[in-house]
Image 1 (spheres, rainbow, N blue to C red):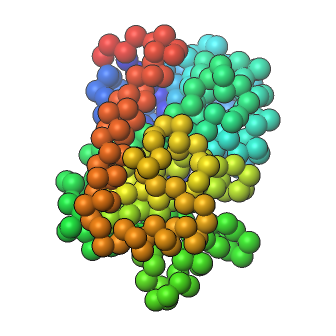
Image 2 (image 1 turned 180 degrees about the vertical axis):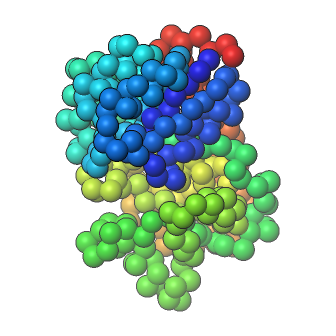
Length: 308
């Protein structure tokens, strides 16, 4: 099977082609559609030249992107196309997802933010962000983890941001700066492995489930990553994480900074308790949400024979 991944040239998106390549089903070519001089004719010619059996499109809501007509032509004339969307539950995406659908741009659209609250979700596919377990070091017992509770990710957009407000509130609690440990995620290349390593040093991993526009709650990739790290996930109450995992068994929910504080203080010296929850989430992620299971669901949905 030959696959072609059409993607933006950001380092966040190359992982999808890597996951697909790691399945060893056949060649996987990666083409950055925002580096072709805005020439759709060149993009279409190159896509046809690759002669793929599958086209995977990594979408973006703003910035340079192929037209509806070009995407529809790829799906109808070159190969079945699948759209991977990381923020389908966020309202700014909805009109575009519907346009794609009714124009026949894709054989399947896949939301990877874990929320089924998006238009046409009943006929499409919702999943969690695929993360390669091999990126994570060997499991560390919680008695050997130096960080009681860590937050690894983006700090939010500043004043008024729910994420920024949550982090600042926890950092301000006595003793100041000790309630949580921070590792701000970098967009630089070759930093993801150290991010994964950091999570394996955290007994508890704080997640903040709001989307970028704060109009929706999502299952962040950090949920899957915390699971693979074997950390005890602290998750925003009401997040669609509850549709995939069991609160109280696989992770713990908090309503606000005060409840998060109570949980952290209660468990900061209870490594056996945090490890039990972390191991439960890890087992479920490894059993149900690996890249292999993710792609096999897609192949099944579009009726693609995946023999190499």
